[in-house]
Image 1 (cartoon, rainbow, N blue to C red):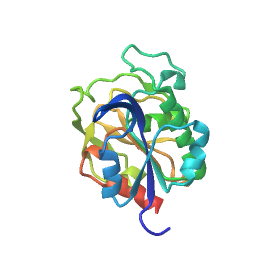
Image 2 (cartoon, rainbow, N blue to C red; image 1 turned 90 degrees about the horizontal axis):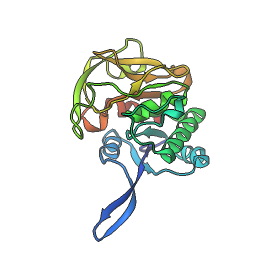
Image 3 (cartoon, rainbow, N blue to C red; image 1 turned 30 degrees about the vertical axis):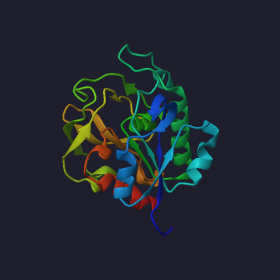
Length: 228
């Protein structure tokens, strides 16, 4: 292909949003996501929730896919009962984004999962989640920072070779890894901070932190390169 690759980013629906004198449901995405795609050299397309059966046709139009952060994945998706600290489910979004992930994996479209997106990738491949951990979301509504260390020999380590301080806000994490996934970065407390599939299964990477809230473009540039 020529030109800037088209990168789809999943969005969510929010009721009761104010638009001047109007209060309407809106398809929303924090601006950091499309800006990160644009700064890294891609064209950003917002993907609001749709019927799961339309996911394959949607992904077929894309050169790359980002599954954005957001609310907790419903525990029934990985065979667990809800912890009291787990947030309310967004079932239409779960269904849509899981369908997007499946379509991207099937079609070999490069895929980056961010925070919730990494957790969904793990669940899509049969993994489970820890429903609550402390120390990764200390102040409500405020991104913290901590260091993540790459695992040598992984795709993530090829992209970011050194330990790096990253923007973070999450209270759930990967527990049992999904089929074929490999940990490619850890936090100092042992939390899995990045996961990936082997290179023979395409360019597939998930990170637990929020690169759209930082200045490091390397992860998104790597996705853009794969999508080109």
